[in-house]
Length: 148
Length: 183
Ligand SMILES: [Zn+2]
Image 1 (tube, rainbow over the protein chains, first blue to last red):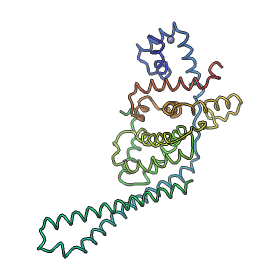
Image 2: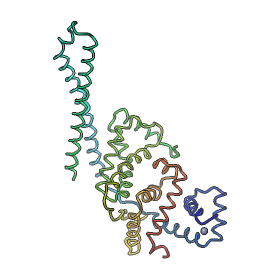
Image 3: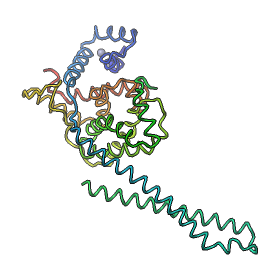
Image 4: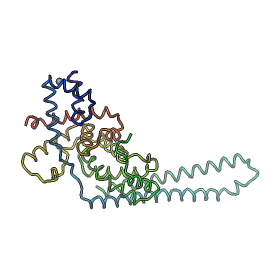
């Protein structure tokens, strides 16, 4: 076993993740290699330094306040989706009302009327979706400004 | 693969939250937001950005929750979202921040001895100098006490990769801590 191969196993040893064969091979190498023994010693020391240290945390009331902000954003998102859906329905109805007579005109082939109806419906959905996206982006940007 | 099984309470909250109960989602938030924040702040080295990332993570999680695989633990899934946010912020950043912030209490007690303070400062600076991938795996293993399997689940990589990346990270960190090595 070379020192290069031993390297990764040293981490496994620290974490108790080696198989019996791996541990035996590593120990055999360590017996004859002061370089790798020193490396293991350094890794153990590093582990000792980090043990008991924890990353700085925020007080609980920060999380309560933060959750309220998240909650509001979730609720508003739901509002924008509903508003988008409502706008789509209204837009479709307005288009239908405007073209009703023409759509019911038996003189125009059914395929043409159906095609025009679907085209109008598709345009309405696209418009509503674009409006909703713009609203969300606008709100998001404004939010960012308030945060800074 | 999940070694640490999700608790029944967590599963109950996930079910309720995915059917639209925001209060259940709030409980999940209180369980996991501090952990997500602490890794994000260690990774980004910036508390304000870490708070932003925590918020973005939970808003995305709320939308994606109906697609969450019921029964698996929530943390690795949440962390995957947070990690994407952090990595894209790091990629946009022109210059690195200076150090990782630790809690003042060491092992539950406040220790202000010169040596402890110096070691801590040295470690904070050395961690900040690591590549983000290395810093990340040190944070997950040493400061979140995650198992290899949990780390693999959080990073979306094989367990073997965890051992080797962890080793390279530890080696780089030990090299950065040079003054204390022979102490
Ligand atoms: Zn060797």
